[in-house]
Length: 496
Image (tube, rainbow, N blue to C red; front, top):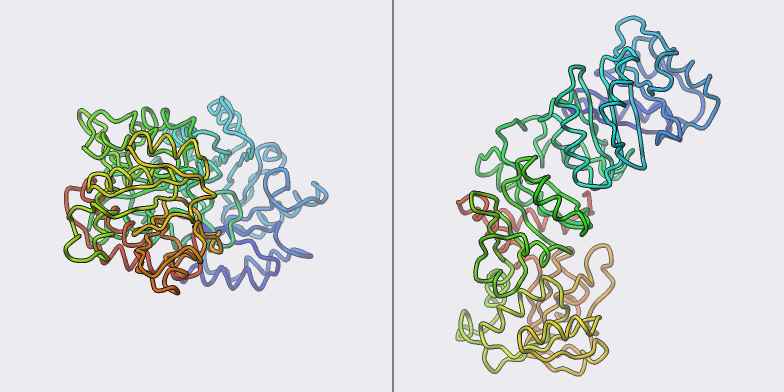
């Protein structure tokens, strides 16, 4: 079950939002009293309520907004119990001072916005002595391993326990809570109104992750990155799973560089992850964990796709094939899929995406010039693939046939930036921007304005995602479905 948190300043807005959420299918809502401006009118909130509620009155030190007298706060909590609230949230340090009464169920909670304590079992045992119906432990994830620790705590508890990690790194625990026996998880009414770090919108939990339908048999996949909030891959892959009728889910995993080994070697097996998309900044590091690599991974030294299985993990690089297929859509017929000998390509960037594209271009005999904001990185890549590096400040002096942006410059939210000045773009150029959000980057817009041919990042992203999907599942998916899903997301106001 999903408990949707409502935090509004006025009673009428709480009541209206509660009614709307129940109409949308919410089975339980949390009323955050600490968001209310002025005097709290419990009877108004609880009389004729459209569905069950958890009443919460959170202190600032526990992540709430209340900073007044503690005795007054506890009096309001007692009043909520007397008024017949379905659930009351009581912090573990005050729970024993507020006795059980009537049919109200007690959620004994603990919040830690700094870390996930090492002794979770000891904390849980202490909370068991507070007369709980449900124990809730919400902690900050500082390692991907924290998700596993807190979910296993919930799974092994005899008392119903909500275990979740906060922050972007903790999002998997919110999505997988039901699978590990949590009586409910928390979501926000919309992605623009998060009441705790890492909360996911209710509609996204229902429509994208299908939270209520996740079981022990559900196969898990995901994208590993840092940061992760910008990734739209979960929307594409989960839409494809739904279209194919597959009991699979694709999750976001934020993993810092220093935790990649622990994540791949320990967390993925513990959670049962079957496959991963790999993106910034892990493509090169992840290749070191691959046991069976395709030709592109061997040549590039970077992977964007991992599949776990016997003898694995298996590593693939779908960037290479998808980039060349995307480029072919705009090239003359005689060049499509054929040699690019005699064509000069200016590659902007030297990271995982750029590395894959340079390798693919060299296979087709293109003449490649590499320019990166860090000259040493450009030189290293150029030496590896026998290309020519140039200073970032000199990139405008090159007159390429094909310009490729392999940097994140222009990516949401920095949509007013371009890695290449408009005055350097010529009508005869092909301009290929690997950034897909937004599709119409400033670079693409300015290239169109001068009459250059363009290839957007959406074309490449969809192709590589569809190829990843095939590696994950063994079957083809609809590129058009992925393309329409992506364009709907990037063409609208951001909601995730």
